[in-house]
Image 1 (cartoon, rainbow, N blue to C red):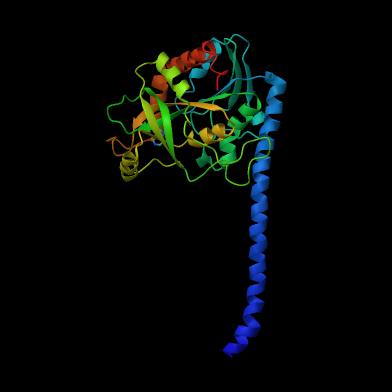
Image 2 (spheres, protein in one colour):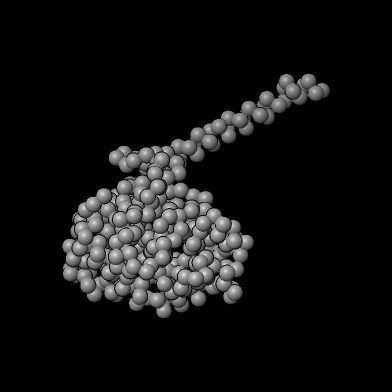
Length: 319
Ligand code: HPA
């Protein structure tokens, strides 16, 4: 009986399963290749729609994270051209951010002779739209000519002696989201391949430009988690031993996407709270937003002054 099963029955059962699985894997691989190509093509289509309303050339992308939204007013005030504003929901390819405190507008502003593309909010990985939606704005900005990505966020702080409500400059990151925007096939030509060097991910010249504007500012290693839950005290103790100074749920994937496209990255975090366990109080999204509101003028002014400095030093021109 066993011989009958081995010779006659198992091949009949296994063979279709084997070929079904092989086909499924092949289809999966082809599907991944399509996903990568489609993500870059979508960025081109979004750029085309923006170009029609805001003109061709942009130099610097600014992404406003939690606590940075009020910078919009200060930047609009100093624009030397009328500010163009588009609802991202009206641009093909964009996902309207769902996180509280994140706006859904794309603005085109001029500071001196520098054309700034401003996103008043971002899409986070935890919103569930996938990694390409998270980095879409960066790819669109690159397609519109941006050479610098200035990314901002609100983040938990692991350094007890740093002041909550103060901005810090990110000097490096640890990506613990478990994702990369470069997963899948190589990006389509003319883009570089997927093995991107991240040695100077946060550009040292741009970081020293910030120190010229704000000499006392601290420099931090940013630890990026998937979220949306806050960390446990044990996780915070663990990442402290790994060298983290700040912890958040954004920025790292956008930085990887920007570096892949050859853009220089400057990232600023607003310390909205002491990280879990260091903070004696439980963490809440509302408290984070409240600190953002209280710091709005200070961080808005920093952003404005940094952009002015980028303009006067013609930082968009050096590589
Ligand atoms: N952890 C993760 N993300 C955050 C935090 C935090 O403590 N604060 C603001 N964003």
